[in-house]
Length: 594
Image (cartoon, rainbow, N blue to C red; front, side, top):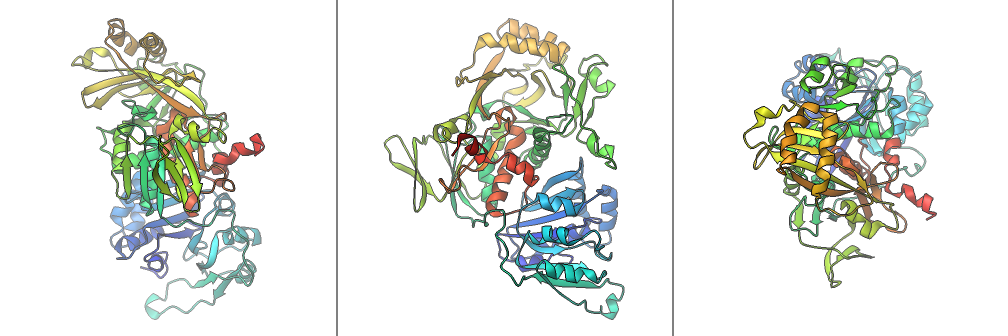
C-alpha cells in the first residue's frame, strides 16, 4: 500500500467518524484502499466518509482491473461496481457495509462542486497521485473553497509539481513540508508535499453548525420517515427511542401493502427531479442492506405511462455520457410497451432505478437495529423544553420520554406539534388490492409495475399470497383514513387508462365486490418538497423534523434521514448544498415573518 493511500484512516481510530477527500477520483483504487484499511483496523471509526470528484466516471471494468493490482481489493471493487450506475453531473451517495462506509461522489469539476458541500474534512489529497497538480486549475478561489471544509489539523497531501502551489496553499492556511526523497525500493514513487491546515489566523466559523456528539434522542413517529431517521442516527452511535400512538409500527400512511419508489422527471431537471433521483438510489441501497430481494422489495424497474402528458427527460450537458442517463431513466422500448399491453406509439419512460417495496417490512427491520428502542401505544399530547432538553408528555401530562434531541417524523400527525411552523397539508390516498387467489395466469397483468395515471403493482408476494395493488386516489385536506368502497370504481377507471389489459382482467373482481381497499393520509407542503432539519434553531433548539414527503415517502425517506444526520454531524451532504437548503425545515419562517 502506498503511503497515504489509506486516507490516514488509522488516525481516526476510536472516533465517531473519519472524513477523507480526494479531489481526483482517478481509478477508484484510493477509495478501495481506504475502505480496506477501515475494515482491517481494530479501532476503526464508526463511520468512514470518502468524498471524491471526477469529470468522467471510469467504466466499472476499468476500476476492477486496477483493483487487481492490490491484494484484497477485488471483492471491494465488485461491490463498488454494483452501485456504479446513472452517474450524472452532481452528487451521488453510495453506501457500503451496512451504511458505515459512505462514498460521496461529485461528478463534475471539483473546484465548482466543492462550493456545493458543507462538512468538516479530516484528510485531503489534492489531485491524483503521480500527476502534478495544475496550479491554473487550483487558483486561490478554488483553494479557499477547499480550506472552508477544513478544521485546524486537517491533513493534506499534494503531488509535488508547480512551485506556485505551496505559496497559494499558505495563503489559504495550509502549512506544507518539502517532499522527502523516496527510498531506493520506491524510487519510482511520486514526490508528495504533505502538510496540514493550520492558519496563523482564527478561521471564520463554518456555514454549518458544529458537529453534535451522539447521545440520546427521541423520534416521534414509527412510519417510514421515523424508522429511517432512527436507523441513520443509531448507525452514528445515538441511543434512540421511537414513540408512536399506535400499537404497531407502520400503521399510518406507511401501512399500505406495497408501494413504488420512482423518480420524478422534468425537462428542466427541477429540484424534485434531482431529489427523487437521489432518493431512488438511497432507497435501493437501504432496502438491499435490510431486506430480502424478491420478497420484501424488488429493483424491478417501473414503466411510466405518459397518460397525463408526455414526460420529457432533461437535455444532457455537453460531454455527458448519454448512457449515464439511460441507466436511470430512458424512453420505454416498443417491447416494454407491448409487454404492458400498450400501443407502441404510447409516450412512456422506463425507470430502471425504480421498484416496489413493502414499507412495513422495512420499518420493522430498521426499528430492530441496535441502539433503537420502539415504544408503541404511547400517544404524546404535549412537548416542553427545559435545560435538559425536550420532554414528551402524555394525556395526564406525565413525562413519557426526555432527550436533548427530538425529531418529529409523524407524517400528518406532526401538525399537532408543528402547525405554527410548517404549513402541512393533508393528502388522503386510497388503493385497491387483492390476492391473486390462484388465477394469476388469467389476469393479463404486465411483468413489471406501471405508474403515471395511478399505479399498478402486478405481483407482490404478501403474507397471504401473490397480490396485485392498484391506486391511488388523491384527496387534499382530508384527514379521514377510513377506506371508502365507493372510491374503488375511480381506481378501476384510472387503471383502464394506465393499463387496459390489466383493467379488463381485474374488472370482474371490482364488479363482484371482491376487491379490498386501504387508505392513508400523507403530509405535503406547498412547494412539494419535504422538510428536513431544525424547525427554528434559535427559538426551539434541539427540535428537528423530517416530514412532508406526500406520496413519495418510499422514494425520499431514506435520503432525507441521511440528510438530517449529515447536517447534525457536519458530515458530507448526500445532495448539493443548494438542494439541501431547498428542503430546510425553517424555510417557511420568513414567509410567516417569524
